[in-house]
Image (cartoon, rainbow, N blue to C red; front, side, top):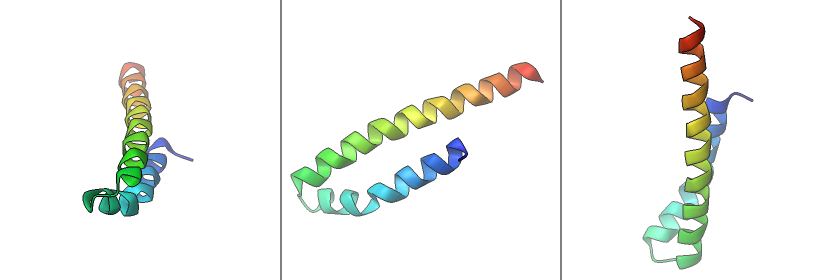
Length: 57
């Protein structure tokens, strides 16, 4: 699976919990924060891949 697809799926997966967290559900907020950390890591991997592509060109 492509990293960009992983990133998109991770964002879509937290949508429901995000809305619950905005409504005051603290457990959903915790899940969103954990998922956002994973999203950050995936985004960093995408960034690194793009730097490698740039260096190869």
